[in-house]
Image (cartoon, rainbow, N blue to C red; front, side, top):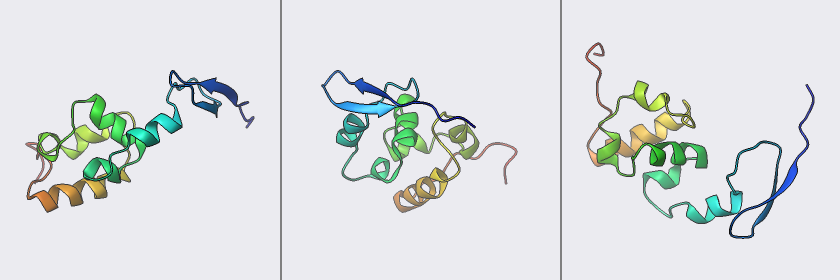
Amino acid sequence: MATSEKKLKICSKGHKYYKSSDCPTCPTCEQERKPADGFLSQLSAPARRALENNGITTLQQLSKFSEKEILQFHGIGPASLPKLKAALKEEGVSFKKLTNEK
């Protein structure tokens, strides 16, 4: 498998970074945006963006979705679920149950 050549990119804030993909996300800006606390601070940047892009910024909003629905979001993988479940449990809520789930 051939490796892609990384290209120098500069974000709108002037940060310089190299990426081999067309992804416009600046790693420095993402690090600056990362919350200091709360359940979103426990997630990777792609997982956090996936929730935010779907209007989920609180555990109450998250609890309105099933695990299956959350896993459909681009950027959310199975590794994120334990962190999300733990945060929901701590808050005394859980993922929405689908009608065919027990």
